[in-house]
Image 1 (cartoon, rainbow, N blue to C red):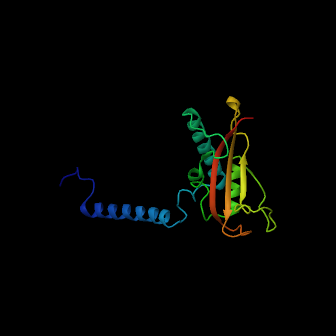
Image 2: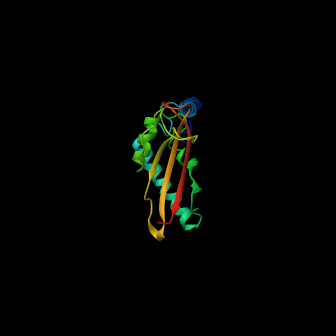
Image 3: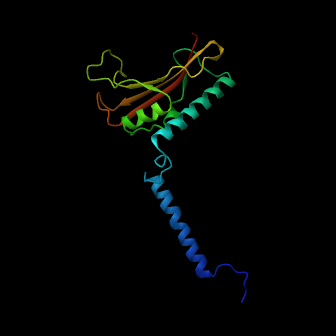
Length: 167
């Protein structure tokens, strides 16, 4: 008998079935939102910390490449923010994530919100001083929109940007 063989045919089949089971358990929970989903596995505070790191990374990249847009248009970072604050998340969770990332989260508007703006019921969060170098004031703004006025159960819309303004 050859002692160099580490697994018999039965052992290899058992190992292959076990590995397949583990893969299915992991991907099934990731695809269908189970407990093992990578974003669900970390705390809201950790998501906020990672969001802050990502915002600063993209800001420094835009600055280094001289691609910062001045004025009211700014640089859209909604896609980045939506990696950490997702459509369908609760407003409570989103606000916790944003606070952990260093944002000041303004209170939720009530039904008596003034103005005619379509976003008058959105919750707005700011980082007012990301960077003061070079004579520019850098602000990060995130807007979280409810599906209907005063329904702050889950997020329906997210927009975000980095804005550069002269002091």
